[in-house]
Image (cartoon, rainbow, N blue to C red; front, top):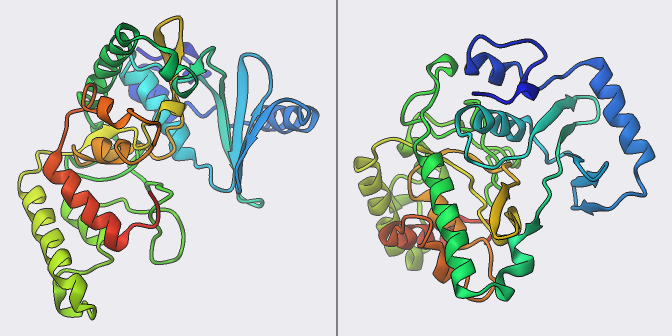
Length: 305
């Protein structure tokens, strides 16, 4: 069942707790903005359009123009329906439409990024962590979409049924937000910028590879048995550990319902610490053909790593 923080009232179902869990009210908005104003001296992590500010030893706020409520929705969804997936506890989330800024206040998990200690760990310690990660990601794969949200089984979308966010992919409007898509075929067509045949490809040197990509996408669509919930950015820095235990999986901003291979193909290209790629297949199912397909897509259409 859901953690009590998810709703100010007692929910009758997990779905109600998820849907009402942002705790967006004037008091929480004022409190968050005040805490940010008086905590600027606290340690923080800053990116071009977003920041993570540590409000205390147990709480942080993630905010900025590239932060989205879909991340808060994913955290709530997992807290309700995947109790063994260690996500931060959500305190509140809201968007300031005038500023175009979203704020997510959440638990600051007591743990170190695995990137800090991976090379120090023994083989046995690594294997124990990988076993924990496999259990966590198997629980993610077992999640079902909620009929109350009206999300189709094959849909490619965020946890709440809305847009996905991926820093490598831009939509036609020049914004980093994509979908939602009714199925994998629509998602793949978007990934190819709407290219359904090579007649529109002027570069003859690219035609053969793009034709192969189209054929591989089509084969994947025919074998698709539904989408699965996916973190989308599995790197050592997003895995928190303490005393040999995985205590947190963080940064759910790129999560959502994706084809089954997506977790593996994104993870294999997310973190370049020496030796890490060889470990990924120990906690995620490997998809070698889909990896080749993804490599072709990255070569011709992808904006990032």
